[in-house]
Length: 188
Image 1 (cartoon, rainbow, N blue to C red):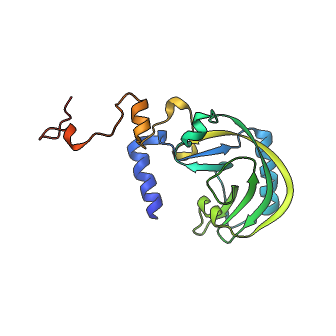
Image 2 (cartoon, one colour):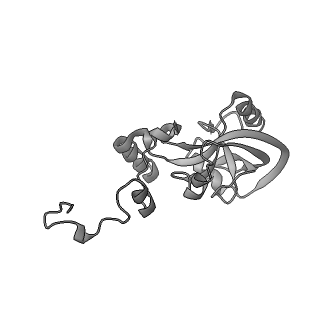
Image 3 (spheres, rainbow, N blue to C red):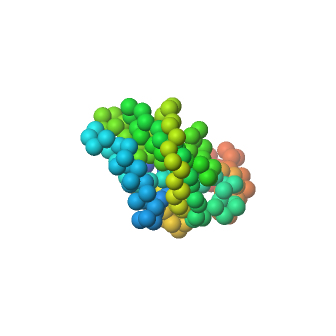
């Protein structure tokens, strides 16, 4: 078992599916998924590869960046253009453009190698070949464990920042040592 999988399992057991694993442009509509399925059939060998559980272009790990949330991008429709195919011994992905991504090469993972590959290996693909441009539509979503698309009320954000604490009504600063008595209880 990899350390990544171990950590994911602990988080899943502790917090359930409501923790945001990543934010992405998720391809949801059947007609749009079919466009990617056609490319899957064309480029992915029939044996030795595991199909990605869902098709998405990762924007960032964790919750949507505050700058994108503040401008109202969560749940926004987005059109991406698929323009390249990247193939390595560990993953096969479609290079995209049309929206921000923290990945050096924005992409949609098609498949990963059954022998030790994982979807995240797509970000290490170094050789990309041009293909005919194909437009696909998706929606910006926060995604939890098990690739569950989270609704705003389902999200459990375990990343604490001063802004988020203040916004939640918890004061404008992180608790300091002087905020606690000698027994560890918070002083009101």
